[in-house]
Image (cartoon, rainbow, N blue to C red):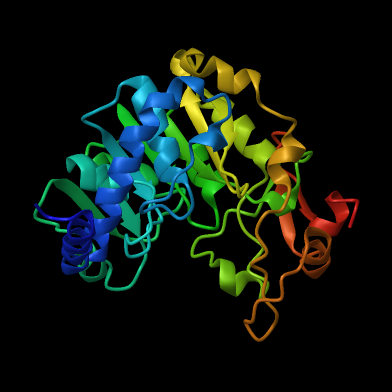
Length: 313
C-alpha cells in the first residue's frame, strides 16, 4: 500500500517533469470543471474570473460564457496576442484545437508562437501584420472568419475603436474589447485613427491609447451587442450578441453605473526614463492633457485636446 505522502511525492514529481503550460492547462481545467457546478449562481461577470493563459481572469469568464451558451466546437479571432503565452483564446485552442485566427505585429511572430503551442495540432491560423481600419476585413475574409464566430477579442492598445467600427455587425456571439479607463465614464472619446500607432511611442506614460468605455458600448450597440460587464481590473469589456443576451439577464440586471467600471485598478504609467511611476488617474490626465482625442458622440467627430474635453483635470 503506497502512503498518501508517497502518492503526493510521485504526483508532484510528475508535474515537474512536464512543461509549465501543461501544468497550467491541467490545473486550470480541473478548476473550471469544478467551477461549472456554480455557474448558475453567478450574478456578476467578475465572479467567474480565473486565469490560466489569459492576462488576468478572462479564461474563467470565457468558460462561463461558453458554458451558458453551450458552445463547444468554437471559431475565434483574436487580435493582439503577443507571443501567445498570454491570450484570451489560448485556453480555447489548447482545450479543443478549435478553428481560429490570431493576429499580431510581433517580430518573428510564428517562431515565437511555435515555442508556446504545437502549431501542427488543430486549425489555428497566424497572421503577422499590423491591423488597421483599412485592412481588417480583408484579412478576416482571407481566412473565411468574418462571420459566425463564437469569440472575437481585440486588444492592440491603440486604434481599437476604429477597427471595430469597420467590422460586420454581429460578427461573433461573444466580443471582448479593451477600453481605456483613464478616459472616464461620461465621454464618448477615442484616440485619432492613426496607422502604425504605438502606445509606448505616442507618449512616455503609455497611458494614451484606446477609447472610453462609453464610446465602446455605443459602437458595440450599433453592431448588435449588449454590454454584460468587465474584468476586475477594469480594462476589458464583454459583450454578447443581442439575440442571445437574455441568457445573461442576471448579469445585465446587476450592472452598475459606468463609473464603477472606470475606477483605475492598475497603475502602469511610466516616467520619461521608462520606469513605472504609479500615477493615479488625475496625475496621468495632467501628463497627457495636450494630446488629441476624437469626440465620437456626434457624426462630426470633432477633435479636442484632452484638457478641452475632460474638464476635471
